[in-house]
Amino acid sequence: MIVPLLDLRAQYRQLQNEVDAAVHRVLESSEFIGGRESECLERELAGYLGVTDVVTVNSGTDALVLSLKALGVGSGDEVIVPSFTFFATAAAVSLAGATPKFADCAPDSYNVDISALQKAKGQHTKAVIVVHLFGEPVDLSPIQKWCTEHGLWLIEDAAQAIGARYADQSVGSVGDIGAFSFYPTKNLGAFGDGGAIACRDPAIARCLRQLRNHGRAGRYEHQVIGCNSRLDEIQAAILRAKLPFLDTWNERRRRLAARYQRGLQGTVCRWQTANVQATPVYHQFVIRHPQRDALQAFLTTHGIATAVFYSIPCHLQPALAESHGEVSLQHAERLSEEVLALPIYPELTEEAVDHVTGLVHLFEQQR
Image: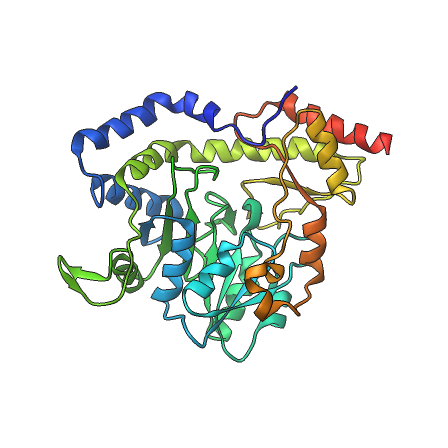
């Protein structure tokens, strides 16, 4: 049995009529930038997430960069970020002119916790970015309280977690700002790059709308230095077509993850246990295994696609070696040696999951 890590063609085949109609609608309107589709998507996402405003942008990275700029974070400021995450989270801080300060993962977790953030806080800390990695919500309540007590902005990087919930709130709606990505592989994916920013403060939303559109106040009046970070209408229309299916897809991911967890009982595999207040969405199903590389090679020979997210923690990335080369974060570094993502997507069959878990058992029996 050949099992890909992800099969976007299967999703398109199921939604071909809806997606094709959405694209055709934009082509007929000839509104390709800043039209009705983007406006409707922003309203629909705001309702889905339970926030006052959603501002669409052209990537999840820009969602973070513009969020920091809108909050006044820049030169001389430090922003605490997890080291075990995709590099864009740390890069966004640098692109905004600030300095990333890295926090380690909590023990037996892919995410940071309050104690890790407290250890990372410095004199110039102005904001915290928490990442709901792999669709697993961070334990937000103590972090939000701590940020409020210390006057720190709280930004949720929910690029991998749209639809996940914490204490009956959508992730991305709890902090001051939530940043989302619509990269094609995400749980809600466009057919190209895309992103969005969720917030509750209308003044921040107005600033974000200016920043994404060259700082414009009027047609040729530019009050601030902005950039070109608008979501195009075709992507907005495709996302609108997909959004009504998101909760069903996420529930399917949870069922598949539960099947993986049952099937891997009796192996040495470990995985993060969801917080009791959290409802994850399993953007990835990531296990830890002490013989990760050998297991990955074994699965590859049997037609099972896997991936390592992430093999190098941010604090060890070459781009940051000069400023962070002496930093040591033991949990993040250990995770980078042990994590392995197994196939998970809504169209994946139960038989495929059972086949993968059976191969993991076979691998361990043969060692």
